[in-house]
Length: 359
Image (tube, rainbow, N blue to C red; front, side, top):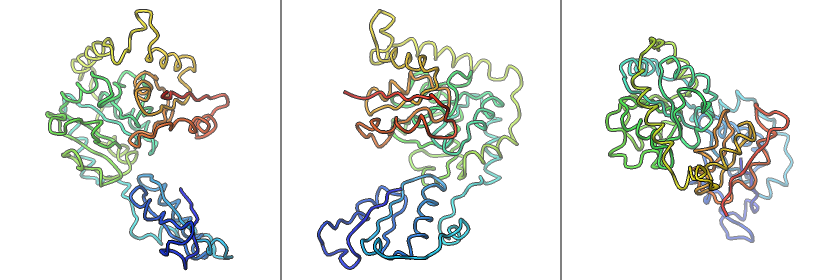
């Protein structure tokens, strides 16, 4: 939520002293914008703004208030949640996946021999970590994750395979390129994940579950699109997915394990040089994780350190990794570390935060 003040309503659009068209400036980067000229509208607008920001795919909402509205008095009541929903008839995010599409997901999983789950930030936003783990374990499917999907699964879990994409692990990208099914859950197929979309996952059928229909099919052709809250969709899918028999996919998982050993033994931007007695970034980041019992919140600045944190932090719990991601904001970790130790449902006394920043 961003709340700003502007000149009096009568002066808007007249280039008055200190006037700025902040609404026009922020329109391309916000989920919704309001310009309030009457104090009587404020209770409704603020309630709607918070509802829009938090419902469906979360996003920033901007409220600009004119000077005269700020100087007015009002006794307008604060609306109830039902009032807010009724007042936004055009804003009804789809939460439940279509039953036919849910059954198609289960059918795709049953037919697949080399499936991979791609977990994105939507898993964390929806709180779908348990459903993700249950699906992976029941069907014996390895899980890869995006930069903002870090923490969706404990990295020590046997089916946790690693960070994907341009700055991710070679073995993860190799698994994606050889997969016959990709289950994309609450993530974007952005260029840092796919590289050249013409050669991305050439053998795979793609299932894409996202609450934002604009993301589905935007960059990559999808075989089974599902619009809905990923937690609810996964809960429905689990009703149709059988538990994999003992030994199923053993050969596949053994191949992935071999690729992982080869990949992790390969140097990446100086990683692994600690084995030769040199101090290296991967060693420092991994030791921060060890020293904090993998219970700290790690915040990466933009640049190479951001990728070192993502690859070597060794994350064990949800929401323990913060990154500006696609925004690419320099100096972004200067403020966030103050909040995580004392915020959120997993807060515990003594929890710490660590920052990896650029020079």
